[in-house]
Length: 172
Ligand code: ATP
Ligand code: MG
Image (cartoon, rainbow, N blue to C red; front, side, top):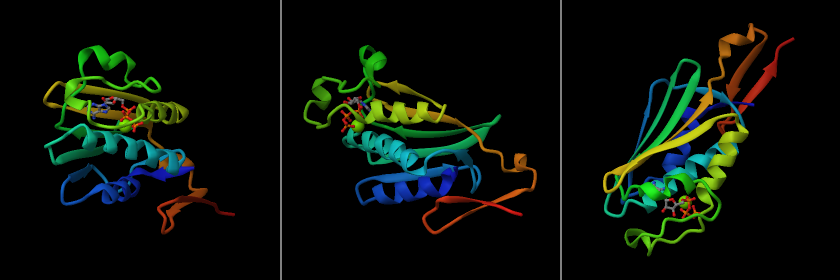
């Protein structure tokens, strides 16, 4: 069903925001709609923010961008942390894969977060990728098809309830 990503992002970011981490949201409009499962998309963002914080010891800032262009909505999570070594990049989305570097040996995890992210994003016919530089940080970006409200021919209206769940009401 239709999901407005902007309030969903706001909600997840609010859960992570604390004295130690400052998470900034940048969105180009108050409504950016995609089609999908809001709980699973929330989990994608949660896993990406979790990594951004966990692999950024000493950096207190994360930036989340939500934008749309040419029929695609993109959601990115940028950190200023450890970065991802060149030789780990191909396997990063593989189940149970973890980077075994001295800089992160003390940081716990199972290696499932990104495998789940990839599975959910691909289940939404979307794409996920990243850019990273060692010692400077990483940006994970996912792209989904934008859901155009105007394409619905006036037959349908969409609104959100308190849980930010989009509801589709067929008018008669
Ligand atoms: P889990 O998410 O299951 O608790 P995890 O964080 O180790 O465990 P993934 O989220 O799949 O597993 O990430 C795989 C590996 O990729 C991590 O072990 C980490 O080394 C590296 N990684 C992921 N995100 C980042 C990031 N933002 N910055 C630096 N390294 C990262
Ligand atoms: Mg993780």
